[in-house]
Length: 318
Image (cartoon, rainbow, N blue to C red; front, side, top):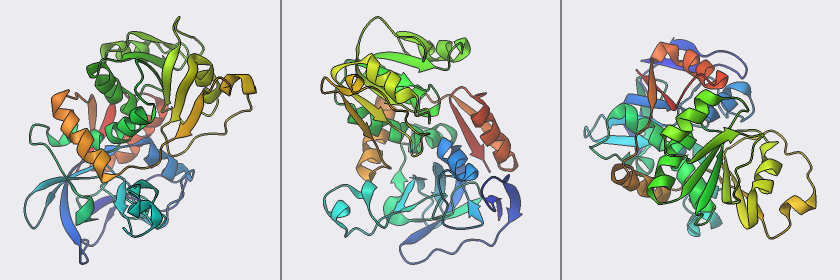
């Protein structure tokens, strides 16, 4: 089968012909129909998140067809848990101490075929086609977990208006929340995109709306945004970091945190998150903005994501 593989960090992906994967007991063989491109893939490419195998097939937003049953399923970032540790037993499988992740510890979906643990294959709504279902499996899913970690905010700020943000903006607006979008200073194109998704205010991270926020969600991997977000939320407000990797957070005055403001992160996902998101997706309905790439153009998709050239999501179609 054809696949785009990463041989080592800080190298480009290469097209390879790999043996057809063989599922072990409890696994299923999947024919990949689409795979979303995520900023976590960039972190793996750059060595900021460590892969545990080499060569590695990236990609953890997999829309695929089961070879055995022809059922269409989605495979997310969380690919395996032990089911027995204190976190799994307590309903927090996203923190499983032995967890394995798709496209990091397990080969992912930048390929024509993949294998996955049957327990972590999510049924997909028929109403959403392959290409538009792919970004739901991480961008929207982790984004929803990030939104929920912010409590029940009437006014929510979103820092970094990319793949996850444009979908979570749609959910937040549908739920009756006011959304304030923060982009790179001067990025009027992305600010207009944010307004088109329902944000009532959009500006640079060097600006502040006239109102205080109840919660701020940070999707850009930039630690310097944390103090800015803390200053933008009201007393008792929550700042949530929604990414797997972030540059160092600079020191800031205690006064920015004081007033019972909270700073927290989200890690990974649970299958319950996946079911909640996919049920919401058809009710809202979510409208991912997607740019498609052929399998052999996966590196170009990552380059476009890095440069900020994309509005919305990139999806690879083998």
